[in-house]
Length: 171
Image (cartoon, rainbow, N blue to C red):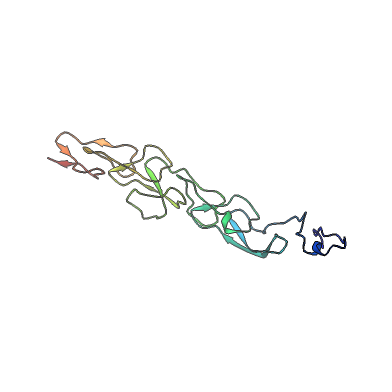
């Protein structure tokens, strides 16, 4: 056997000696996907030919020849991948937006890892820098438009009675 370092020394225990100097190859899959593989007795993977599985949205895999789904790494905070099979995550999300796993998320509270979308902060919330997982609330007496990078003070004669108010009210 190629890679089998068992030598015939007459010692019975050598029959069960582990394989040494075995060079394993990965799957035939490209970046963004991993193979459908099982581990063999030699410790090397045995992969189905061209049976590649895309890494899910919110993850990426930069390397070719992966043999396990564990190689698909979640996008780091502030970054995202909207589609399955990403070789690398996009981002960071721009100021005024947040990273989330839901394209319809409008509450401004997203995720720190594994994001799939950059959504604008809702009115009354903001992010002053890019790559944020959640939007900050505007303070009392302040508000903001959707997608804001800062809050603005209410005009004279107007107020807000709660944090993250989407609009100023008239006295």
